[in-house]
Image 1 (tube, helix red, strand yellow):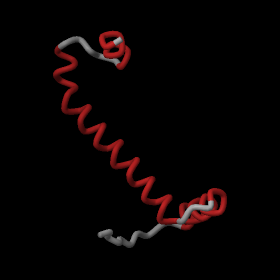
Image 2 (image 1 turned 30 degrees about the vertical axis):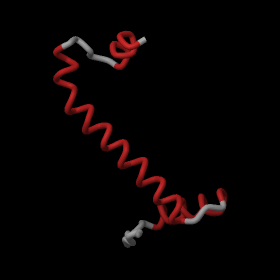
Image 3 (image 1 turned 45 degrees about the vertical axis):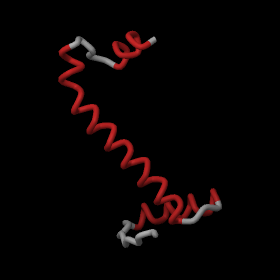
Image 4 (image 1 turned 90 degrees about the horizontal axis):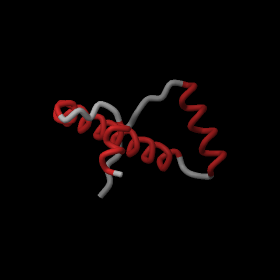
Length: 72
């Protein structure tokens, strides 16, 4: 079962969305759903990163390169 929501878009965002619909042949709903999924994933990642940051810093993992070096 799916759920519907209503959102307001400013004119410039609506025009951009309509251009993408024309260029890609996808529906407005498909584009908005994909964008929302990506944004929610990014927010979840950022939240997890903030949670583990103190533990990483305690082990001297200060950059992505520090982590990559350790797991490579």
